[in-house]
Image 1 (tube, helix red, strand yellow):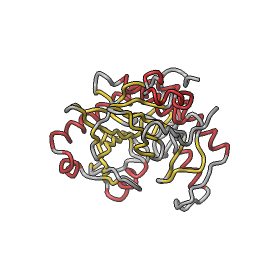
Image 2: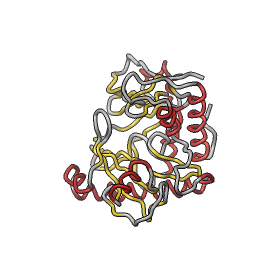
Image 3: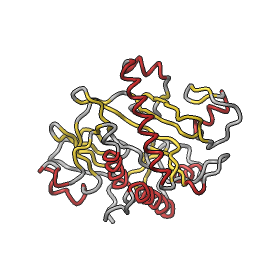
Image 4: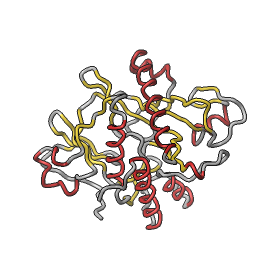
Length: 296
């Protein structure tokens, strides 16, 4: 099994190398490669996770197709045969982990939806009785299902944490009509995704979406409903009052907290058992949500 931590395609111009994705210029389109890098607490760790990039890419492709009647996406193809000829000799590396995508003008906000009270949202609730600016009933516990999903926008940050913002601030950034459209789309996508996941034994606690525009049309971009962008819980082990074990990289965060890492560079590497356990969680999330094993 090949672990891909970095790609190098000299024939195409590298536009950016993010925490996980390497993005190349493909003329009117983009070639977006999901590597096996993993980040936590805003740092890329010293170890990669086998198959992680393929899970993120192919699970996003599944959801883009699943949601095509609700919103168009930036996805053109995940078939390496459709990639630019300049990338042909790198097919063995790119296959399964790469999306040929439309170039969209991205909105400067992330559209977060919370269906359960947990994480930083729970901490805010304990301190203020609200989360993401929404007043909640008293007496809620960690991991309780919220009365209704909450839309919680965040301003994208070039480095470090994204900044949680109010809906009014989002209106100032993208305009009132567009903010309303993005909020409605986000809640609709969350509801459909959560229903599909729960029918298959997974609870979608929270997630984030990114949108852009092309020729005046809103496109769902980046990744969608993956273990990197979402908090997935097994329904069978869900007990309100404590956060259940998850299918996402919380397993990695828990290890880093356990060893007392101060969240400053250099980022540590992960032991083999944490790498294996994380890879198994990612593959299982794909198998359950897409309804088939991750392709070889």
